[in-house]
Image (tube, rainbow, N blue to C red; front, side, top):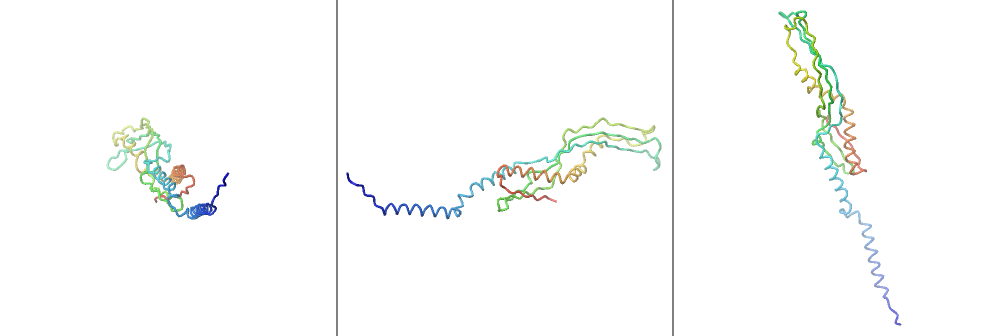
Length: 202
């Protein structure tokens, strides 16, 4: 039986070339950006898409109830006439929703794997299930001397923009906390390691 001769030097050369290639790949792998940016870019795109999908976002639902009151008084030559007054009481309740316009939320990457969420001013989103009871009137004997009270005007006053702004100002801390929780949840659902900071419009 003939012995098979194996040349040692060619085998050694191939082995060395393979080791050299492996060494170069391992030592220079960080300089090959495509191997490391695909996931980051994909994650970034998904986060931006998830955030931009939100339009009008209700962050708080406030249970509001109260009694509105309006009085009028009849006058004669600038002097109040006794028993000519009108008083109307209007009981109401509804849920006031406040939040943000999600289309104006800006998301920026901070360059360190984190994100800065720039939140616009909070806005009144709407009313849910408003209910107004029949008005209760208490009129004097000669109340026809005083102007009539319009229920519609009372309803409009309850639902006025001034009151809407009050709902926001009175619950500003809660709104900021809810905004942070809401957008942090969206971002970390895509990238659990993302660091999220917030800037709120004044």
